[in-house]
Image (cartoon, rainbow, N blue to C red; front, side, top):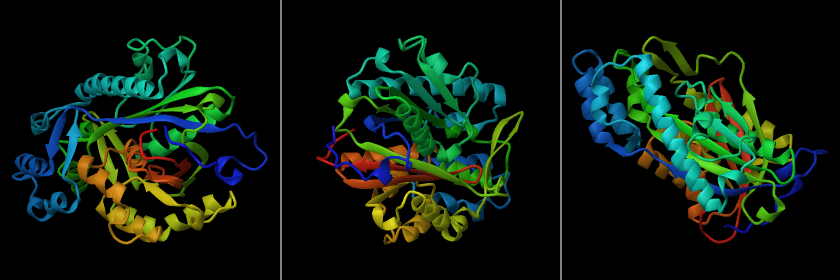
Length: 374
């Protein structure tokens, strides 16, 4: 467990709101078993697209420029060499998302020294598949949670889901002293691969995206004081930006919407959204000891380092996670937060990510004490 210095009131709650403290009792990350080096992904992409995509030779450099060494997949690389329909992808999503959620939940409970019956709320975040009953309901048949546990499945937040899931879990936990919430974030972005789509956006997605999961126990139980503190959270949704990021859905599954303008939006519009969030709580960028950013890609990282006044490659934890795992969508920022915890970073951190809407997400986390895991 990490010892903390208590953050200011502005860091922990809206002015005039009840100040029920929320802490991060544990945070864990997991990945599926199939590791795919970027060089292999590039070779397989050439097998799939080389003869069918006239401009492939000009675009394959995206694999070299992505700053990714490898990523993980719930399926072996051979699965991607042929077409698959939405029915097959949905079945695979339900199977593998449940497995990853199970592994992450069990590990988070173990790290928190808690039993399933100690959990009052489960928040499940995912945007890469559809399941009704939802994944956390399926999980209740594998882990003996209480039958009266509150459940909140969240779909559609995309890459912003890790931060906004943390914020929703924090808000629910702070609604009543003594609550313990299990946050589970799972994305199987590899299942959005489209054999049938000969588009630049599909090729970029093939070079960027991987699978992963994270889980956290968030507590307002006074006995859990001494863990990292979760403070204020918020978001900013820009008007008329629905086409920036998201999914088109058809008979063959999810087809990525991924505009080239995302780094430009970060450069031109993200700073004002960031400053607006901070100013509403009496803060400025100078009050942030370190950002904890979702590493969406190499160009995204270049712009975020400029916004937060870091030299290129200065956001080292983000770069490490991107290189080792690729962009896993929602869980990725929680991999970064875990890295910061393990390397002993201290102070007031701002977790931030960008997702469909087009939306910026923000959540304050105060770390401190000796190096180690939450």
